[in-house]
Image 1 (cartoon, helix red, strand yellow):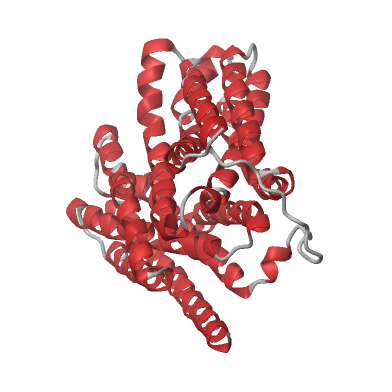
Image 2 (cartoon, rainbow, N blue to C red):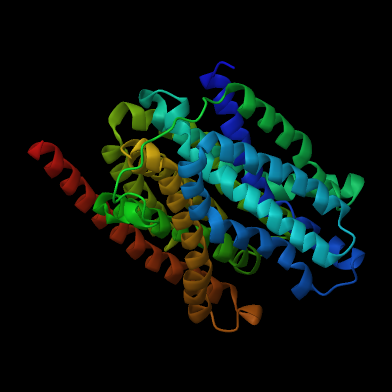
Length: 404
């Protein structure tokens, strides 16, 4: 059973795409689910939350389990569980049954996300690590962005069950490709002192990379939390135009992810990390001063381009020098840091917006704009903090190399 970098990369790409698609495709079906199961919104929203919580709670454990049992083996298991859970979701006889199936789907997705990043070093040459990380980051953004649109089409044609059934054929394809083309698991001799669950966090450079990932994810999440209020109440856009405006960021991420990875391979992760943070800062500054749709969208394009550069470079820096027997664990930590950043962005930066925009339901357009400006002024501070961490990490890495 020969391995193939191209076939293996397709399987990793599909794994990342499916796991990300699962985070957003169910949202559009919540009203239909409320009608189908005669349930309140507070109950049906657990269809979304159960999936996200399952990923967040187990993704580090999934990464560590992959290191111990074999990353290819765990990816195959995750794909199989995800695919079967898609079918269980569509066949669920009750809302509780659907929520339970979504938990299983989230467990499978956690293994898929952790192993997709963790197996990059096993699948492609080191010289192509950056572009591969950029590709996986692109597919993560594409999967999240296309969920509502694809879900809406499936919902209108075949009902809510189609939201989950769509994952089955793609899951089977990814499973077959992974079985056929991914390299067989290698057996590593455990090294004393490296088996502790959180032992990778003793590396200061890794801690900095994870912290930066969380901070920047929080900034990006602010565009999804604050953006709809500014577009609808601040600029008066209807739902259709607001949806199109909201799609600009994910589309830019999809277009810039692979070029950002290529640039990382060519210039090195340190330079591209700093460049990405600089572009991010420019985008956040523009959003803190934005007035009107054109300026807002221009700022969003700048911000998202910076995020693509940062994500490709930082993920490469985090994963490139990790010992082979710890790649799964570190990949899980990297995904966890991003999820925690998304949660922090939703809660903390959302709270900043709420504080700066009292009574948002009846707020004036200017009041909503002030809230946007205040939120992204705080976001500028988070980016500067990430920049200080990047500078400190580079000094530590360069000092280590000089000593060697």
